[in-house]
Image (cartoon, rainbow, N blue to C red; front, side, top):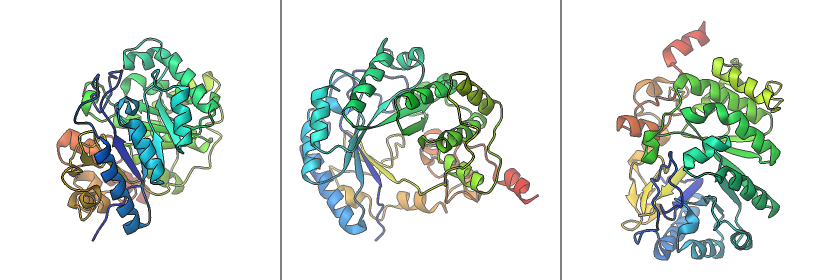
Length: 371
Ligand code: SF4
């Protein structure tokens, strides 16, 4: 029996949210739905987590997400059930009046591990993406409150054409608020994200090198749907030059102009570490690898989660990398990187196809390496 053992299990409590962000992968709606996950579903998921833990010795860490998970009528009961079952969890809420000191006290009492909130650029861009004036200011206020509670806070940012050059500004905020972890999402054309323009592959290569310098200077960076970051790290370990082209230079220049310094002095690059495996249960019970990867693996209302993750051919193909098509199939980094299966599926309706975000060419680049 082959069991896929996720490190992180995302539970989409509801698609309801007060905002309708331009890049929302969930295509959020205004109110909770009667078909959202309820306590019967949550208890089934917790039971599956127990069985997965027995089988693999590694229970997944749960992330409660949405929409805005705080809008789910089952949110507090879910948190209590996770606490009572000793399942580690974090929360990814929207910045609204529901994210108040009463809620933070409750989550601290129930042993929440950490919290993540989103920041996508300077005030105009952040508010424009959320179609809500003043939300940038509210977000900074919430960050202060969360930090004052002693909660570990992570910032999530989605990179796309409209905000690529804003990342030095976001980094400045992270440093000012002493936030150690930055999760950078690379846009996938799913949900409302279909209407946004992703960055080009050549820009991505420069941006990933910029992130490598950010990480080397002390801020932990995790990329979502850009596994090429692991290939970049591996290339750095192999001695490849990590200064990039025009976008890289511009990002460094903009960083220095706003006193975000020390990036180019950081030459001891992090190792590529191990892959983080994820699974996602959507608000209607569908299971997939991630919220950005809409290939249904099963549904927890028809089959327990641990059954969905057992002997699953799609998961085995993704894990092995042996069936990948195109350049990902020929690439010597496919076991380290593997490309974004979510992007291949969204763009080509084939999760085994190559990742259009990647500028690496196995033939050309490996000739250069061999020369
Ligand atoms: S070709 Fe595919 S496997 Fe190789 S680095 Fe690019 S995305 Fe990763």
